[in-house]
Length: 139
Image (cartoon, rainbow, N blue to C red):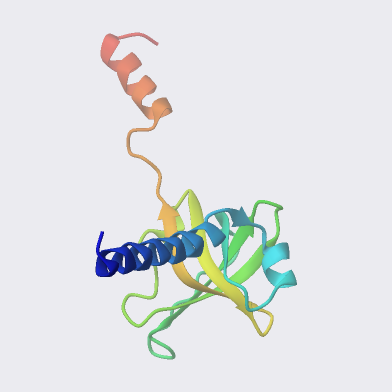
């Protein structure tokens, strides 16, 4: 094997290791308590939208900011600041079943850099069972 090939293999291995370590650090979800205990460190927080609180997106005041509250796995509700230059209000936020956010605590506030939502399926089992029962003529 030539020296240039060995160097290329080493470079590829190092890059792959960096990519894997970056994604492994934020792959497991934590509660807000851990994120707030370690401000400045990036975490993945999962939860559900707190529907008792308002989702605020006012493009006349700040077109890149959307704020909303999320209830984490411990039942804690925290305000989330999501800033994005294009489409800062995630589509389907109010209808989501769960929310995964990558972000960090800055000055006592959780700032999400990415927001991923799981939306309800239009093919949920209960609806399918009711439609199937109705089509068979059973009550």
